[in-house]
Length: 275
Image 1 (tube, helix red, strand yellow):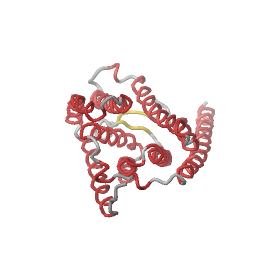
Image 2 (cartoon, one colour):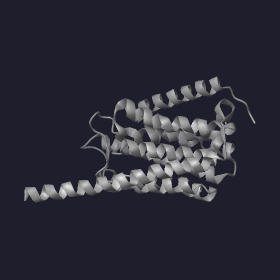
Image 3 (cartoon, rainbow, N blue to C red):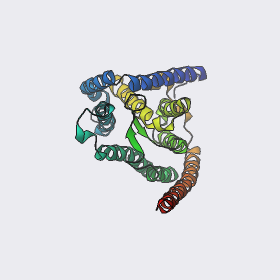
């Protein structure tokens, strides 16, 4: 088992987190360049074969992340200008498609939790799926600052729930990559908090995940020598992490449906008053 000093973890994780944060902001502001780079990245597919060999599951995961990210870039360009672009890419089906991608991304990892026997974390993942705000009211492309970002009105607590659930999943499934995964999970949180906009969390999550998957697929196992965290594994705490996430998810779900009920009553009361 490799021995990495604490200072190396702290330094490498800080550098990688900072790098990802900067890339998220660049992807937000420089849309055309981001789109071109994203499409060119797909042509590095032969390098992915060298990295993963016949592991089509891993290759599939990379494609499932990178292709939708390229699609998001195209949609951002198409929706950036009100009177320009293809009309069929401005319709509601686009938002529903992105919702399904996010839902399936969480569901796929949750099923993996189930197969690993990580049942408590599985429940947390399913509740995370159920409480995603649905289109089209809560999903749109930004127009206020002219960057056309993918915006989703996610409560900050949902973002935190997703983060802790995903941390629990990665820790149980592949502890060796927990440190690097921690970096890509905290960047959307930091980004949302610094900008005081939790609706930009999904924007940050899309690009951090895509960048990370591209690096792993193209350059191979560069994270383990730098910040490999297999030595962090402790079988005893895995179910306790899952229990924490399950309790968090149940409490959040109860709050979420209570909020939806109150919003529905307020809306009904408003229409009655207007009439």
